[in-house]
Length: 166
Image (cartoon, rainbow, N blue to C red; front, side):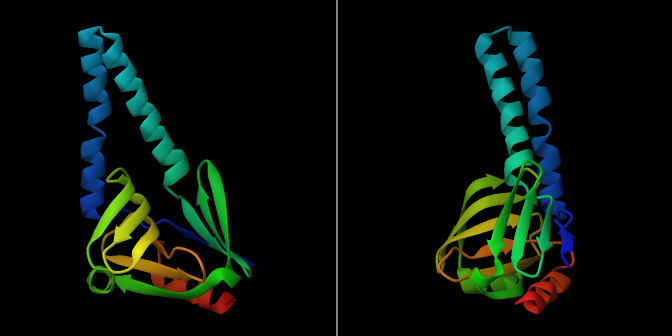
């Protein structure tokens, strides 16, 4: 049996940032039409392609916990991680994350529907992250792999589901 957990709803800051970023394509589109320049049109098309790539390839829609794997499901792909490769799973507040990991620099998508990709932290190095909130995370520590920071809906139930499957 498997249990499905949606990506958590966006926190107000990330939702507002996403709404602000959604103003960019129409603004660039109007500029491209008004300028009647190839450069403006190419920039507009690249921007649309970038937004599409973020939605289909980088932003997960949900997570599936089964008896032997964790699946991260994106609209355009899936990724499975064996539960045997997991060391520990726990929920973290933003304060706990900051205390344990120090400051962080995002390498990847940030702001459009959340944050996705890699996060370099001053105390723990590189971790993978797929977050839509900034207040409560789930940290999945892996044996021989990068830790994974995610924000599933119902984080406590997610942690319990993984722990029960381990």
